[in-house]
Image 1 (tube, rainbow, N blue to C red):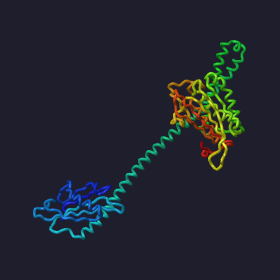
Image 2 (cartoon, rainbow, N blue to C red):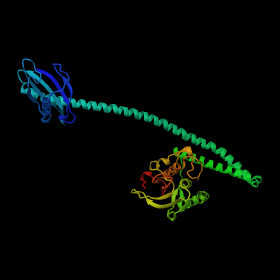
Image 3 (cartoon, rainbow, N blue to C red):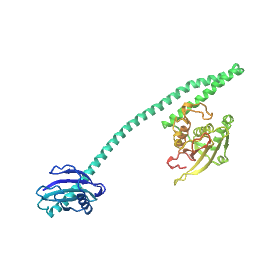
Image 4 (cartoon, one colour):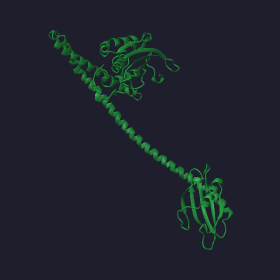
Length: 409
């Protein structure tokens, strides 16, 4: 009679087998087995065949009439490997028939296959639960994304409306300040003339900010209009440079236009848009370069790295400023991204590390990409003592509108 059944499973091999079930008619329960039985288990797993061995009656806890005890171990097999083994203890006057071994060989295959299927079912159910959880998280993220998208659209709409609303009083303020500046009573009074000049400078600064806000809103809403015209980059950059003489003299920064700019070909581009791009880059270079530093602009002609071989101009604005950390070199082109801690914000269009609304580089990127170009920055990192500097690269197609996917530096 079969008095006890044990079942082991191993994920590696028989030597690492772990008993997971112990059931028997003698109600022995879960208990450790002697090493002799483990040897039978290991042999059955190694040879992948049922093993029947006799055991000493007293050693195996047989009955008082000293009936013989046999141990039958058979492996649990699958097509790929051995999952473990089952052990049966028989007690009686006669050994189990040899045919029983063959029966249990088949049983081992069926049980092994069943266990493997149960494992696969468990894994599939676990993966399904994980997929359902991931799907639920994805739905939550999609809902949050839609909320953020609507908030972003609302913010863009507000900026557009606010910019238009600010333009009206600005126009009135600028108009009346010009009239006062032309009045002989004001012009002949140095004190009053200085007050009017301060009003005009403030109005001009505010109009620049409002125009930047409108440009950013148009870029966000994809309504920025590009009107390509023949443009000589060197002429445009030199005109911007001329307008910065006063700022350069105040900041004591050396600014150099490399002769390579004169060799750049004519391009088809929106003149006002490209002017804003290089104005923002040149002012930024001055702003983040300490006194005694240098700013240089140079250019070259390159070809697209695709079969078209379309020509591009690459203009580089390099400086010996405080530099930009690598992890921020993409983020600085995001709208409203502050170049430094806003707690220490200091307004000024050219003051060293002077703050602004954080739109200049975002506008520059929007305009460049609208032309089918690319803009990026290279810098070893941020260091206000060693001043490693930065290089801003602008890539523009010579001919109007080319897909940005073909552009590589």
